[in-house]
Length: 186
Image 1 (cartoon, one colour):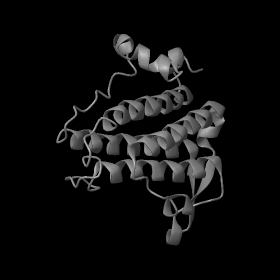
Image 2 (tube, helix red, strand yellow):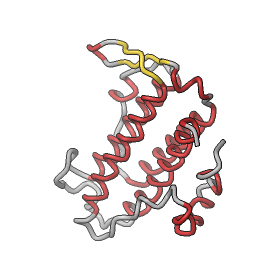
Image 3 (cartoon, one colour):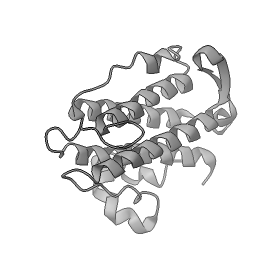
Image 4 (tube, helix red, strand yellow):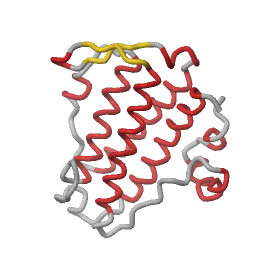
């Protein structure tokens, strides 16, 4: 596996992990989604909205969309988990499509990131992808911890890459139309 294949698999893992997480979030009792909790962002709703807002920002950088920091700053948070789930799934599919279009040379290509008063900073696509994946994993972990204090059990989020785990996620991958793509992306 090369770095390009790894990034494609990480994009698919992002879709799968978010799907698993949101399917549990949708089972929350009324009031639990927005309830104040201990974490970096004070609720499940705010944390999931933050993940999506940053995804929009980084996808704009990666795709050279020209929106810049406004992609984050003008983000309108979702109040309902179902609508947020749909928007996150669309963003995740967009990230997969972006990664699938990349060539190995693209990973070292620089794109401009809008850091507001800090200026326009050129960054490598491979580095931006790594940062985005780490960011999303970090905040999904916070949601996972917050779910421990709710009426639902947090989902397992680390059964994606190993052949050993394939049977545990096979039906989900087929439902998400990922099938064997999680393993064979190149």
